[in-house]
Length: 109
Image 1 (cartoon, rainbow, N blue to C red):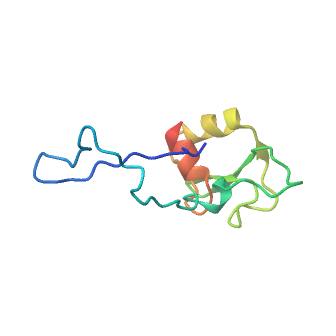
Image 2 (image 1 turned 135 degrees about the horizontal axis):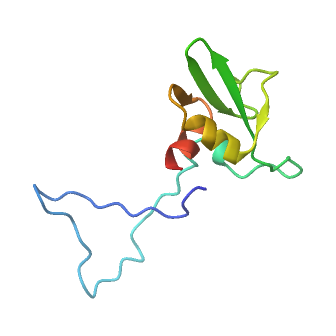
């Protein structure tokens, strides 16, 4: 999931933050729309397979979880469900790939 809106508190001093002035209209304040933080979190193009699957890469002493379609994922890796991926990620020595959305998603779970 990707949030639709973010709220940011702007520091104004040591322990103070900029706050809206009561009674003022801020509708004319320019805002920016930022692209998703990762290309895999963008809406998929029409006709794309929308299932979310995971794969696992086992190396000496490490287990790396990837989102299916990640360029770093092994081409012959097994396909895991989200439950399987979360279980594997909880094991000692497991980590999530930093190149795909695996780290962003699994770290939140």
